[in-house]
Image (cartoon, rainbow, N blue to C red; front, side):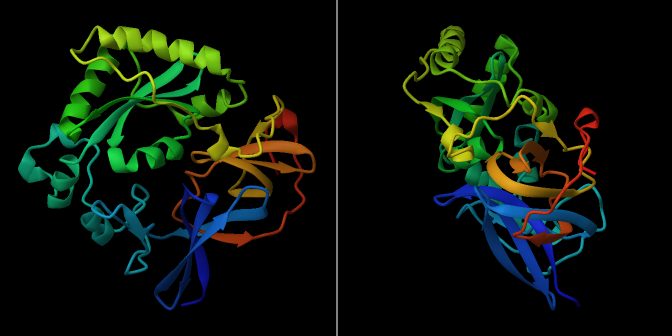
Length: 298
């Protein structure tokens, strides 16, 4: 088998935001983290999709697919063996215990948190995560501010609180990527964010016996855009128009949304439609042609 690379994901660690690149050779994979911020890059989607690998619910660590499996279904990013290894179903609360994997049953019994994720004025969602994985969860969805309002003993208690808050306060549990992208350039001000959080917290306090925690409010911007580069109102969203190719110098990564500059023009692109695909990748910036009025690079 010839050598090639696939994009298996993105993430954040103590060094910053990165692309997760899987280098395939002879049915084996070497995984690389390419750290994005202030780096030039070109990423182009090619034909072929490959399993993005395993995730261990006990250790919370990811690993490559041991089979280096090619994906034939357009609906999944992992092969059956890796899906079975992971054993996670986000809709666990609709399932009987015997329908839940042993690894998720154990995971569900660990401490979980309930949080409010803030993306723009009036755009706040309620969510849950395991205590151990909370910061990763906040970053992977690109929450710009977060209020960690409860810590509870298990996933079921967290889900009960989440569902009640969503129902009573009409807060979404999911926000579409398009809406996040449309509002990414809106400048946020700490006092206004906290005021909106506190108003929601006052309403939540009326729903439960235990009051919410008002002290755990976090500005997440530094994780995504550590140099605080201002995002221009003229930024071009090429998520639906990039023909699978993006190139430039990275400004930051907001969840799955990579923000970059090419010849003085800012762009943003969701990585979700590139994940699992075979890609060509280089650490060089290529010249691009674009028509701003058409929101297109090529």
